[in-house]
Length: 586
Image (cartoon, rainbow, N blue to C red; front, top):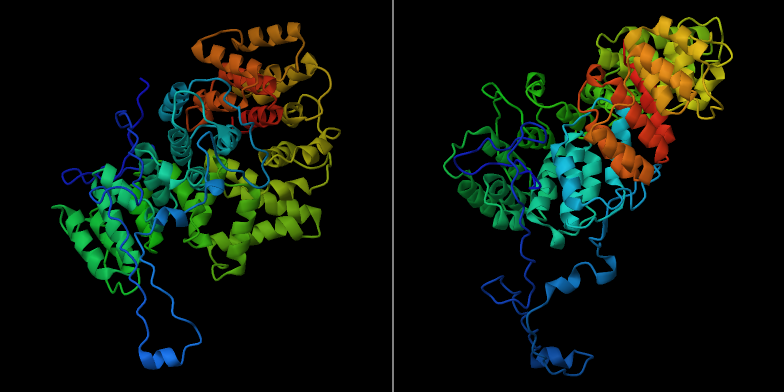
């Protein structure tokens, strides 16, 4: 049960399809042994070749000596050079006792965010978590927790702990965050598990060059075709076409040269200096997209057929949204989907559409969205700004894209003055809160009717709430919102402590929400909240939301998530998750 999950990579000769990216399948767990430490220059020649001795500088002849201003210096014999002296000095090396990265603008989670939880337990939870999860804000909280510099828990190697976090981040679609965590571990400390995850990170970020520092070690410890092809690619990128060609022939290992995975590797290889290789890719017979194919195709400027994205998990679309190699127009639709999963922010979406508006794609469908967005931000007439915002909302046809458009217009909505005459104020408020503009949203408290849907969103998102919610107001909200939305709003308000005890019991009975029921998961997340283990709460919250749609998230689970986050000092996340639940439920 505690064994590590195997990381998909290119298979051996008879299994070339073992290249699936995170979440494509559920490989059987397998222990990940730690590779032996990298040999130093003092090791025997049989372990690693030592550097060749530097030959002595030849002395000048007599004629040359007459022109010299220096005196004769006796030659000093030299021995092998210790190349390790020219690597990172001791003070610059990263400790495995704490790994992670700081994200600009985000307050990191505490180094002890997972408390005293055993490392083996954390590894199993991360490996078994089915990602992406339903909630945008739960995903944001988990990303920040996994990415933060964290103390390595007991009973797990520091490199393996970083690898498990990066592996989960990849399955969430957070390719850049995963790379930041991987990069905080020195390659000398890489374990087999870390090597496997590092390959997936390089593919998810469309950066085959990222493999070149670890290709030799990976090929030594993991006998899979992917690592042999990586060696060939890196030789090509280093400007060694002859060596690269020989390595490529060896790496094919009996598979046909026309195999798409071989061709992609050859295409990367040919981009190096003096590569001179023309490779034509045919996607017609390919029925499945995997990390290898997506990463290498994107890195070399090959467009992956849109139909193939349907054969992969949603996280690959999020990788697409983050890929700078692609044009802004090619990334736009994926970026909106990524925003609903917390991978893309409101500011990121606005910047992306601004690039489209300024580029050659201004007359495209995406260009029209960019123009409406500009109107929503800059028009001097408030009515025209509201009209542009509503136009953007109306273009969305699915629940996920409808929520994406709320995120896209969040800042523009925050610039609309609070006015009782505005129709559907709840959508403007939901748009603001989707990106965390809670202060601007609260300006609408005095103009929305008590008990309305807009009132319910503000009651959940109020950062300065004082005192309990009047049950009569909530009763009116229940009639306006419908059963399912009322259940989630009640669970959120109860978890935030906004009801008197008697009203909480009354509401639970009226709406049939068993907030007092317990199981192993509720006991675990409640206990983590009481201990203040914020990272553990974020991880367990994701465990309770293992669904791609909100329809499968129960009000009872929402109650425990919100209550545990509030207890652990994560009230802001708790409020936003509760608002999101009501917003994304019909």
